[in-house]
Image (cartoon, rainbow, N blue to C red):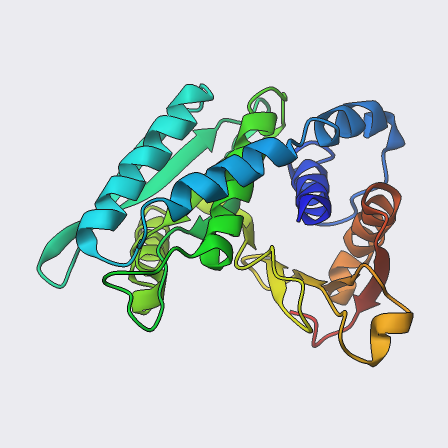
Length: 272
């Protein structure tokens, strides 16, 4: 999972440091030292500790437990010195909480890139036992770790770190946030959604999607299928439409350089 977090961090840096615009982004290897320094700060110990602490809630399905987890995540962001707030909404007669932390950009604060995950869990007996180590303790832990590292970096654009409740209930938490973002006309240029990123089975993925549908990145851990002999550690596919050809090329080159995973770049009209 730590390799996947390195890939995610690299793309966040590409977005927020190498340039806020989505067209004609040129490769800028002068940022290498800064990127490598940040990537080297990823702590496996922090990630494992967070997953273990999330499991100790026993279930993150019920209203009571989700409320407790939201408070826990709020305090974790605060401890890292990241400005954080609750995004509250009504669902099934109760008030629920999303947790939204924000690292303001230094040059173009109105340009927003997001790293998100959901913190609730589910199982066959969700009210009593749904520890959700992978779904989605892994994604939640990654968001916290990314925030811990990015708060020390001066980025051009704003990065919002969102951890949502009730994904297992029709995505009501993220739906509320997305609706409010549209109403406020927030300039959200890209979103990385981290869900089940610790899985090492046949095919699971996370997506990075430009809100306008311009670029998509899928992280695939393909280990138990025919590609096993070719891609022992998985493959990263970075796809985008023709107007974003240079961005796809830049992201592919940087991802290959830093992640040590196999990378495939795809450009086409259907890559949106």
